[in-house]
Image 1 (cartoon, rainbow, N blue to C red):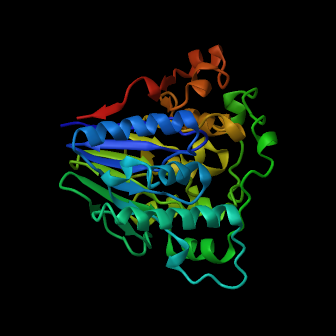
Image 2 (cartoon, rainbow, N blue to C red; image 1 turned 90 degrees about the vertical axis):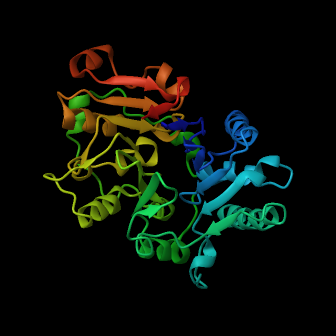
Image 3 (cartoon, helix red, strand yellow; image 1 turned 120 degrees about the vertical axis):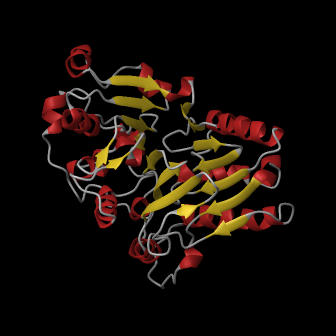
Amino acid sequence: MPISFNFLPAGSGDAILISADGFNILVDGGNNRMRQRCKLSNELKQIKDKNQFLDWVVLTHIDDDHINGVIHILKPTNELNTIVKNIWFNSCDNYQVNSNSQIEDISMTQLKTFEKLVDITKQKNENIKLHKNISINRFNQPLNINKNIKIELLSPTDDALHELHTKYKRTFGENENISKQITDYEYPINELAEISFNPNGDNSVTNKSSIAFILTYKENFNFLLLADAHITEIVDTLKNKGYSENKKLKLHFVKLSHHGSKYNLNIDFLNLIDTDTFIISSNGNHGHPNKETLSKIIIHYHPKPIKFIFNNKNVFENNRIFSISEKEEYKFELELADKNKLTFE
């Protein structure tokens, strides 16, 4: 039996539905805009009609564009909440929140709304279980979640979660309208690939707390889902697991961190992995994906052909990122995940 990945429309966020052998996993739920909500709901209705379950839900972190779609699923009026079984989620109850905590209302409201909805859902779905304290310190070995699928955590650390709940200050929406317009698409690949990585470019504590993991199917297929994780944290974990330039992690694809942000990919990471396919989940907001990110991948692997798969047709069809001459010179491929699920068997 195959394993399939459906990279659903998720606004500026992530919503990934994974299915294999009648077992279903949802990684994040997008930001709950109408089109994304309907697409996700339709997929989940098909699961329910088959008398299957949403066996595992991974909420990678608390940002709006990842959590809001799952909040919608758990609402008491939504019949789909009865199919949910297990949820991975790191909440404020995991750690002592001191008196200097700066969590603002929007995220605190989402956190509390989510956990309240889980409690309400338990009243009619006693199978649902909420698992907290998800970190590489607690899960330092691969976890078998069914007979054919295992998950190996790469992020977050306990330190990252502690930082989230003691120092986090929400900046949701700040300069959003401005950042939507900023892109680096007019610059050529060779110039962008030479720009040095800025390790301090992403200072988001929520991104640092992302649940990122390797998903392995039947021991033969490895997939890397990075959520919005800090790439330096991922590199450290991979090296601690024994991966190096001489012993690379072989992957069927990488879901790029933070929607292809230039602050969440570096050459150190590319030196540790062996793949030819990269997934970008983005609707183009905030200049994502950055052409700098994709350029570094292209140059690093050249002349090996690389494939970029987008989940949003606006980013893909507008064909704004690369020139025709660049495509001809570097021989990379661009595909749209919307047209068909990615299937491996």
